[in-house]
Amino acid sequence: MTMNTDETGEDDGFAEVVTLGKDAPLRLSSGETLSPFNVAYKCWGKLNKTKSNAILVCHALTGDQYARGKNPITGKEGWWPKVIGPGLPIDTDKYFVICPNVLGSCSGSSGPKEINPKTGEPYGLDFPVITVADMVSAQVRLVDYLQIEKLFSVVGGSMGGMQVMHWAVNHRNRVKTAICIASTWRHSAQNIAFHEVGRQAIMADPNWYEGRYFEKKDNRPHAGLSVARMAAHITYMSEKSLTSKFGRNLQDREKLTFGFDADFQIESYLRYQGISFVDRFDANSYLYITRAMDYYDISVEFGGSLTAAFEGTPVKFCLMSFTSDWLYPTSESKEIVRALNAVGAQVSFVEIDMDKGHDSFLLDCPDMFNIISGFLEAEDDFSERDRS
Amino acid sequence: MNNDLNHPRASDIRVDLLLIATMIPEGSRVLDVGCGDGALLDYLRREKNVDARGIELSPEGVKKSVAKGLSVIHGNAEEEISHFPDNSFDYVILSQTLQAMTRPDRILQQLLRVGKRAIVSFPNFGNWRVRLHLMLFGRMPVTKSLDYPWYSTPNIHFCTIRDFVNLCRELDIKIEKSMAVNSVGGRMGLNAMALTNLLATQGLYVLTRE
Image 1 (cartoon, rainbow over the protein chains, first blue to last red):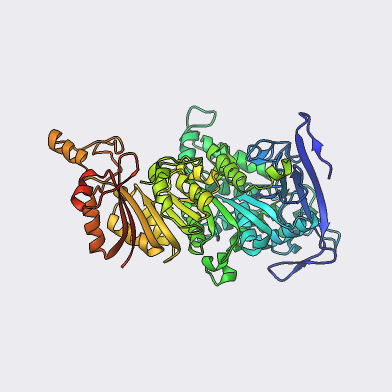
Image 2 (cartoon, rainbow over the protein chains, first blue to last red; image 1 turned 120 degrees about the vertical axis):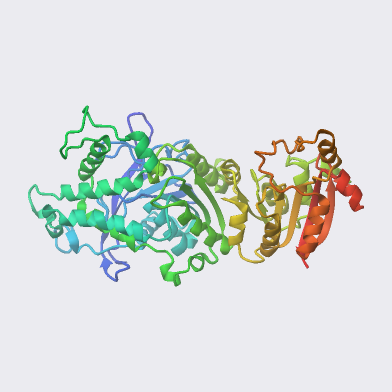
């Protein structure tokens, strides 16, 4: 596999889209099948001879495969630049790092925006409803394609953490270690409620056209998607960080306007978050992925018992939560930790004191960096061997 | 006294921890409640091939433990231990932490619920220096190893060795082994209760259910 380098000469990784499942359709949770399907992924570092140094990084709801390096769609830096790279916690000098775009998303993997091979038209709502399990099934096919038998680690935050848990529970012999950050084991009523607000905002937009907006020339459900993003964005931050960042400060004005302009900085900030989101994300993908998260409950195949899901697991776990995260609060990570302890699994857990809310896992968090690197290093028994 | 106990080798762990380590057989399942930076668990895993787990309240301690490759969870010992199943460990260690518990009696029962044996060490408030300090100055003792003023100390339930032995009797806990420990963490060859309670800096006990 050839590697590209960026202007600074650093390993900028390798990106491609692979078409899989031509002969073996991907069976989905709904009972439907996808054949063929595409997985877009990016990777960094080198796979060692024994293929024992591969780490799969799973992205969150609106993330993509561009975890590190420049995102060609937005022109911005990737979403985990301080975690993945040479000398960083997920050290690309030591590990072969793979980051796939999830099924249902809109950065190259099969999803509602992509062309349905059966019709030659974009799928739209003809794309089957998918689950976190289906995202992972597609990743398993990618890992097979890369001829990797066992991943050294699967790492992710938020929805990425859900994929991590799914890998660890349902593909336990193909995962050595699992790092699950700011995540949960099932979507709560509150989580589903916020997502439903977002979906309704998109579907209420007259430019959504029952999901067939791609047939129209210029009309896109930008207003609905932007409101969905605004509502979701509030859940990613803590009350404390909103207060300290914006308070009741006014936006470029001395006094209230007695109108419905963005008088307050927080309004202006949220509007910006909404507007900048619509350029990079597909409204239908937003429906599909939020739905997948709502359907997520790793205990469901085990009669609702988390301990049954983990019984006899050989995987070594590391979980982290953030004190100010109210979307996936510490108590939910602790439920996972306690179930793992109940079955005698190897698990480490840290609640990190950080006041930035759920988004903490994407921010500059030295505690998180140190725990990731410490946990991985302690389990890595190939670096020495490879060097000698 | 075993000379090795006072001369930890490459391991470099505290003498009192080494004393605990000598009591744990090869290959045991061990839970260290309040494991700090994981020094004891790390030693046990390397030297005795134990299956090691820990609970630690301080994030710093958990981080250092995780970096050693240990499975340690962050949380309050009294709450977290209640989530472990019965008999899930051969040994549960509570080193220098009993006095910081809200209910030392309940934690002792919990230790022996999740473990077949418990190893408990605690500072002896019956030590003559403590008694002398209280008698001479009329103030709560602040010693080198317990250097907090009374109002901010996390050590809220001090006891003497005699108190501890009485509590074990009340709770039907069997004392399998007891050791008096001196100020540098070495074992003292004391047997009589009155003398032990006066001279020992720490008590070290191996407990099991009646």
